[in-house]
Each structure stands twice: as C-alpha cells, then as structure tokens.
Length: 78
Image (cartoon, rainbow, N blue to C red):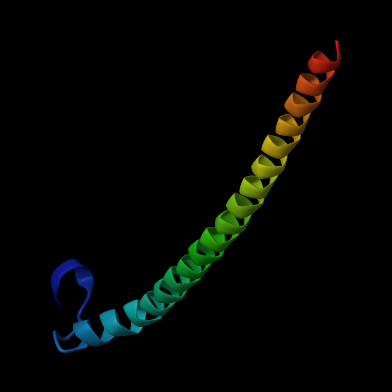
C-alpha cells in the first residue's frame, strides 16, 4: 500500500488531475469571456449615457443663456 492507504500508480496521477481540472478550466474560460463581454457592454452603455448627459448640458446652457437674454432685454425696457 502507498501513502495514506491509497494505492495509485504514479502514471495515473496526471491523468486523474487532467480529468478533474479539464472541465474546471473550461468553465473558468467561459466565465472570463462572459465577464469580458459584460465589461464591453458596460463601456458602450457608459459612452451612450455620457453623450446624452452632454446633450442635456448643452440644452441647459442654451436655456440659461435664453433667460439671461430675456433679463437683459427687460432691464433695457425699464
């Protein structure tokens, strides 16, 4: 008998490790790809949101400018 009561020939050790670790590696690679895909989608969404915020900011700036112009014309009439 070998160590710990387990009688395994040394040739079988790498085979057993490959049988156990092979599927684990496949699952980890799939998770990594999904994670990369999700990060890419997140970057795209952030870019879209950033563009929308820029458009809103421009509209607000224009609206404030319009109010300033109205105030200036009212002051001139007084």
